[in-house]
Amino acid sequence: MADSTEARDSLFDDANGELAIGELEAAVAGYRKCVALDPEFFDGWHALGMALMKTGEHKAAIGAGLQAVTLKPNDLLAWTGLSQMYVKDGQIMEAEHAKGNARILSLGGKIVKDS
Image (cartoon, rainbow, N blue to C red; front, side, top):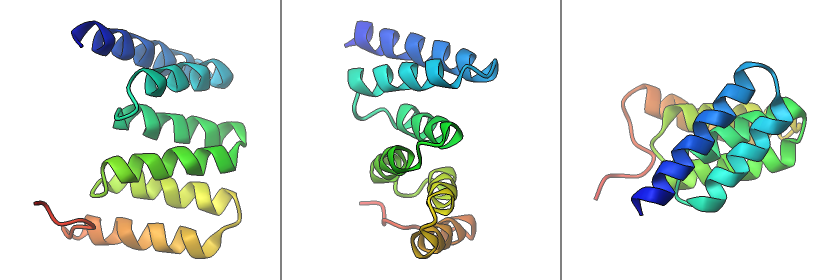
């Protein structure tokens, strides 16, 4: 397990480097490899969604964003990013819902109660 986590983290770092220099397609490819290795990797899904949004792949971005909020339903940045993805895709009602969830979290509330 440690080897796959190390490989995932290395791929993630490389993808972040690609993103930093504006190589969006390479970053997207790297983030896709991360989540393929570890489908429960929240940071990978969130980063993939944001990178896809920047490449104009809005539907795919929304899919990744939804996976991120499924994995961490109480993450403020994940809901904010998902709202932005919906706006870019013209889905205003969905964007407002995601923004509302982000607002709840920003005020200290929870979307899903801790068990």
